[in-house]
Image (cartoon, rainbow, N blue to C red; front, side):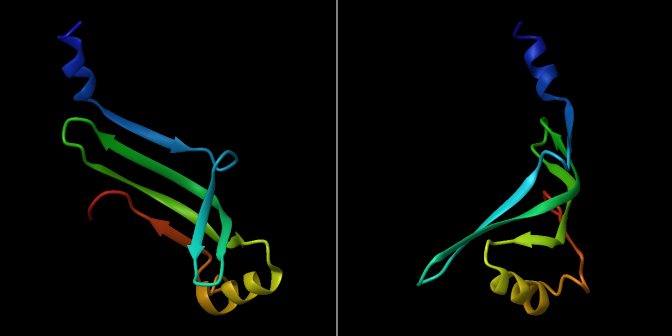
Length: 97
């Protein structure tokens, strides 16, 4: 049993995220209130190497899908902060690049 344990951790693992099952949630704290919301995941894959502890991959978020529950705030967020019409995707890269 002990001999198989190092072999397990020497492997690389790939995680493929299902866009139908994943929602990216956010919380923004302000002096007056806390804003919570979410974005849809477009696609995502993360590779993890147990031996080195390093990860890589890419998560792609649909910037246009962002909602906080307040229509006026969301409209401003999309128009002036995210510019989601101009930049419809946000990409996140786990690990160091």
